Length: 380
Image (tube, rainbow, N blue to C red; front, side, top):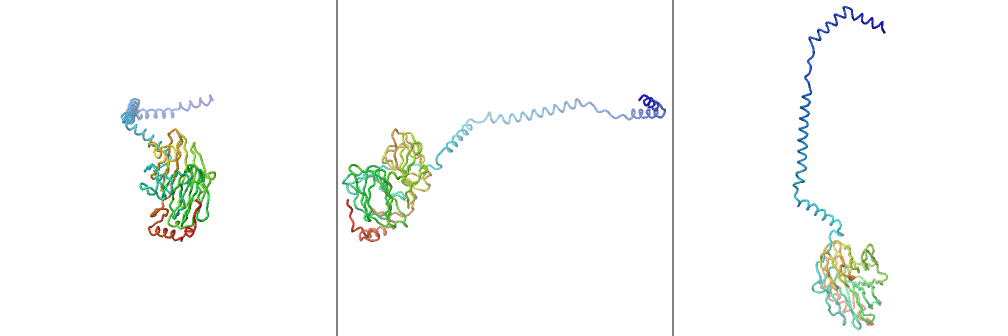
């Protein structure tokens, strides 16, 4: 290493290297590159400009978000809260189109049959019919009064015993007794003659509903569907009990076949309970209050008591509240309208005056379904 360094120094001390180094030094002295001015001040100024711009942006954002919050009218805030509450109430409503009571009718007593008295609601001049329903009677009968031999054509009768018993017999040889809680669903069709009389002592109570038949079914053969109380479908929900005569409630269906689509239910509600029962849209429906009082349709409506018939408006369900201190019992009935002309003459219900005239002639002359009428008399 030492010898190499000594030789390198000798080479550099040579006149050739000395003169070359001197020329390079002189050229660098005369052609020196310009030195850039100090950047410290310029950098400081740019930084300040950036900071100022950032502050302006922040200030604009601050004012943009702060002013609407401070100046927002209180009414808008309340409107938002009210809207939220309204949406929540709508979400919890049991029906999209709750049915309201559109007509209230107190069933009035009138004589019927032989010495009997009934409370009639549907079938009076205030409510001639409610398609497909023709008549509703609440009867209260004691011997010897009753409903002796009489004809029917063109509809169905549904007899529901509330208390006591009634004996029925007809000219086709059918005879039976229905007791408390039993139902007889009779299709008169082309014609039947029968009697309905009290079967025991004391007062016999019940409901009889007439349901129209469509023109295509008015002349079918008569038939019966009879259900004892123990065979009627039942259900219970939140303390509310129901006997399902026809249709479906609380997920339970009745075995009864209805030619005219019908629902018929007997509800009993304890004090403090409420009920929300679907009713098919497009059907006509009504309530008949048997015992107690309740609020029907709208929660803020006035309570209505026994023996009232409540016609329901359109919708998809009925809500009921029992705010009294006693049980509430009522029948809920609904049916699909037939949309056909209704011509009624006593126990005959047809679609035209000519058909009514024909029914009267058939009964009088004993033909077209009434062949046995003139030869039969009930034991009553």
